[in-house]
Length: 354
Ligand code: B12
Ligand code: SF4
Image (cartoon, rainbow, N blue to C red; front, side, top):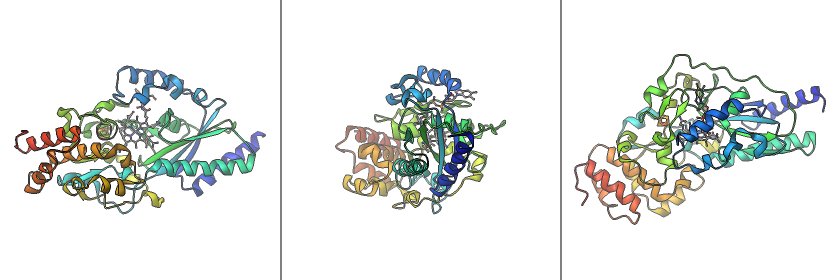
């Protein structure tokens, strides 16, 4: 293809992407050498904690062509997820009897939604150019998504390390197409954080240890989603009522005034999860958990870990007969992980562990 054809193709890709519900699309090359050293250091400091998959792939994460041979361009996409009908986040977090679930997890699991739409975009490209080399990703592969999106002009990395856009704040998922098509490049995003430190100051566990550096081991998102074992006791009181993920650094960010509501029905709130009580959630048996969470990202953490998180929330909740009764009902839970967190929670309410 000549340069004019490639430029026309890039325009078409952006137009098709918008039709498929992507909020923005940009094109980057594969040079992540600037990020490579910082990435190695992050791992060397052990900030990934128990996320072994972060360390497993060596430099493949910063060298796209080593992950998918032949890759010379990355098409980076954004998909907004804020559900239009969700209860106000601050109101839920300030009510200790409620469970706060990160806004990205109130609807259906995003992995499938994004992958399907990225595949549709590749089908459209294939219809235009014939067979071409590509692979689609979102979240789950050794891909440095934020750095690539920044290079592709979708925005800039905020001090909380998430990608920020002037048009959409940070309430979106990222996805990519690695390809061998020599598409024209977009200009990288410019940083607009200035002297603001709101995300760093608000973080309940001081997980943002310096601008652009998160120690995942302290992050509530890691503690409630990625960590499979016992949550360190010292961090439990700081988790408050956040039972799945954490949005505090995003809620504090002034750029999130520009957050866009999602146009994707799959991300709308299901089962009233935006404003539900801890006691009610703790009462779900395993069959109910599986039935209600089918198709949700929450399903992946499993029932025991889910109860572990809610037990922490109940330990931090204002004392009441309902809270005590809910915890007592699980004092002898089959899972040692759940039992241990229940006993801790009862102890917080002045009830002996024995
Ligand atoms: C591992 C991971 C996590 C971990 C670690 C987070 C982290 N900051 O690294 C945990 C479990 C804590 C996590 C939490 C969340 N995550 Co997450 N996560 C990922 C994942 C899988 C990999 C990220 C990664 O590579 N981390 C490793 C480190 C090395 O990367 P890094 O912080 O980007 O490191 C760079 C900077 O530190 C920089 N750097 C270091 N020092 C310095 C110094 C200066 C001066 C500068 C400029 C830069 C700099 O260089 C490093 C290399 O580029 C990505 C998906 C993907 N495949 O990319 C999603 C992803 C980043 N997560 C996402 C989301 C939504 C979240 C949560 C908001 C979920 C929630 N509500 O609970 C929270 C936010 C927490 C936070 N503040 O980061 C989205 C972000 C979308 C966006 N708008 O950017 C992603 C892109 C998933 C997706 N496909 O949509 N996540
Ligand atoms: S998600 Fe929560 S705990 Fe993690 S860095 Fe942001 S504010 Fe801190």
